[in-house]
Image (cartoon, rainbow over all chains, first blue to last red; front, side, top):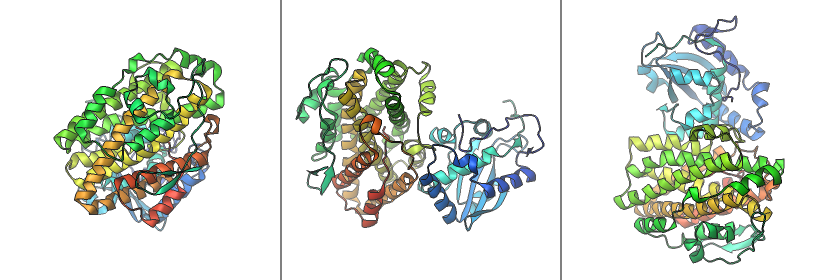
Length: 176
Length: 347
């Protein structure tokens, strides 16, 4: 089973590889920005579940979206219990910046935000379907309304897939 | 294509009714012109003689005079059926020995959307009940039980007829998820977000109208009827899958109560606060915008309907439902509806 991105990903505590940066590090954020600039690549476009009409929709939303989408991840080891938000700023149809946003600033700086637990994020990175995670309340809204999300939902679905597909060295979850 | 007069609403195109044919190995005679009363009173066995088009008309005819919630609840008590009475033995034979690969492929793709739709509504409907009137809560509790029973029905179909490995309900849901043809959570999966908003403010009329628009009007009133028409029309024409036919036709009759309640809710809400019509429109614009991404619907022709027929069926059902709610159709929305892709879902 594959998620939105569909690429093989590294699990928590996996062995280091040359292309992987520490999760949420400057290197990882830059790798995410580069991935977004190249997206959608041929691998993404080859998904038989995504017709041309799907990509036209995504492109239309990307072109029109002026603001920041963010994913907050709760309980990342070493970063406290609260969510760490990865914000993707879009302008003019391109991702202008990828950065971390503190929880207390997220309402001011983010247009639409989802949040999940670190354990759930690791499952998505491991291939758990993003659509299922959205269906089963594992990626609830943190900023914005349901209508805001529905208006750009496949764009968001794709962004989550790209994010999950960026190689990273994930810290092992802290035992409860 | 013929023409049908829908209540006091507009004249809309409709699909010609398919010819009747038998069920299972021993084709049975089609019963033409079965009335609403016979459908209302039918037991599970009796559904083998009823054509799905008659049941779809039963869904729509019930919208001309919508009963109050407690009357719908009493109807539920009379119409409730036992999902464990169905015997999928012949369905298993039909599935594995008589259906073609193409037929199986399309059928399981369409049925999978409904399987997940039933589960998703079972999980999300309680949020709509929270802010409902007490009479409405009683009816919604019966609706919730219907959805749970329908989820079990599809679980049994996918394990006993299709042959997916038995396991927990989630194991089977995960397995049937692989048959879906579209990426993303789908319109029933996104109920989770509409529900979350309702939980935060359960009496908010705008939240409730948005929920009823995406769920009662669109998912049940439009997408679900398409799935029923495609799969049940196929079963009847080929004489296959008798337990599926009976159980899913009974499901369609259950959906009639749900759609009637939902359309009644929307009618009442907009009568009391006409500005809420804008929330119906905005939710529909959003859903149809999402629908514009769904161009990869593989052909349904293996089951006897082409994509354009399904698309036009959707348009007819959506136009009917809006007329039933009693609100005019803005021209921009009409244009979008006319361009919509087939929507095959359910719940």
